[in-house]
Length: 246
Image (cartoon, rainbow, N blue to C red):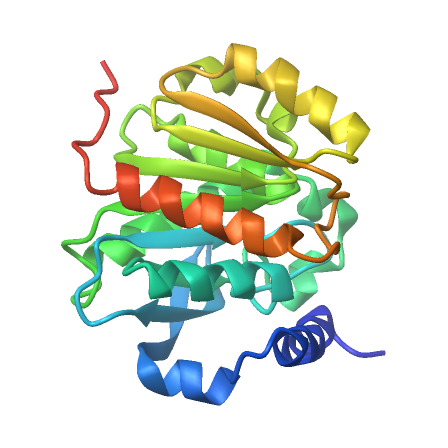
């Protein structure tokens, strides 16, 4: 059976081809490098991509049954780099850990991995001076919000795509980073969960609905809308002062 990473990579290559992207040219045009992030006694593989003069860097938290090769996250990362914002796509879990469904939905575990990756970014010479944002999809959105709620977190902005912010529970009011929730207009159950979570979130917040889109934003133009909204949010807020946690 093919690994989740291999399946995601194949889907990415297919989707980027359909959208007219030359992945090899993209990687050559920007400073991309494979990285390894130590976390909880394991090593998490990732790819750090920085434009020549990045405004900040966004860490991607993928959803369940996905990986750093998520075609949708890679699509958004491409748009961010084009908007002069770097990206770090990495695996929240090792292949072995991901086989356990309890790990896949363990929001505190995933949030801690994101915190550790954030510390790694701050210690890495190429990204040490960059402001950090989070982009989370599905359960990864809950992990991103939980990590951003940390009193010591200095997160410039958070974007959720079809996320489950409700899974961050009691941590939502502690999020001070400007947060954008993007949901498909036809993703009815998730849309309702996001509306409830929006009320509970602290700080600057916004719910953006992509008309006609379902949970995976597979409809024509839907993922492009996600990328456009995310790029606008990050470029606006990563250039501003970090919100106070007090």
